[in-house]
Length: 266
Image 1 (cartoon, one colour):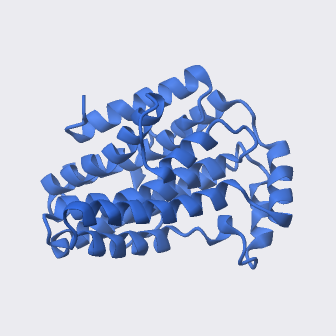
Image 2: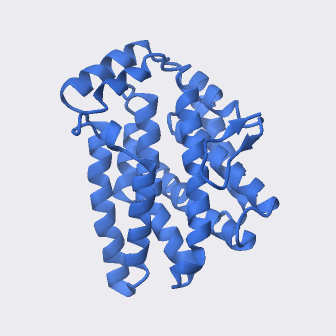
Image 3: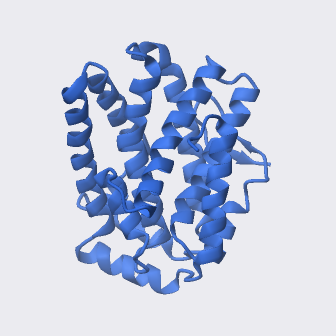
């Protein structure tokens, strides 16, 4: 059944996480990150954080359903967006870092799905959802950086990627949540003006662009590729154990400021 509420989304995500733990399925990595995001959105709705709580729940469900439907399509060998297909195919690849798997999911979900969800929930008037759009991105940013810090435990040499901070060819360094958010908003502004075949074409063109970014994330080259190989040597290989670590912090209270400061774990 399609998700109708945030609780439905959380239940679906929990099922993906449980499957990942039971069957060593790397799709559980992104689900563990996304569970944190969705749980924080639910808490924000309950606490009156958002401009329009009911609309934010609808926004969250539409947004999350893009990911959940793509995963279901992949599992059932049905057509799905090209950017998500790259991410799910990469989940079969044991040579990629946990970080790469997370970024592939974020790439498809923020760069493609977020703009579509914003256009849909706005009813044609994007200005009405701008504040809530910024808020959900604040949550994504804070929790993502928290998770990336958490995975230092499973990938102790991950900081070596910082050696390439000045390497403009490194897509792993260039990937920016802020840039992805801004791109998603511009995409939504374009998409909301389209109807019929033009609407579908706009999404397909965006998907092809994001697919190329996904391929760059999955297929690094040069010295960055060597560094990733070296980091991977020391990264945990037990998928189930990694998912448990990533999902284990959910029970702690996560506080995310409206101004976009990093979340605190209390």
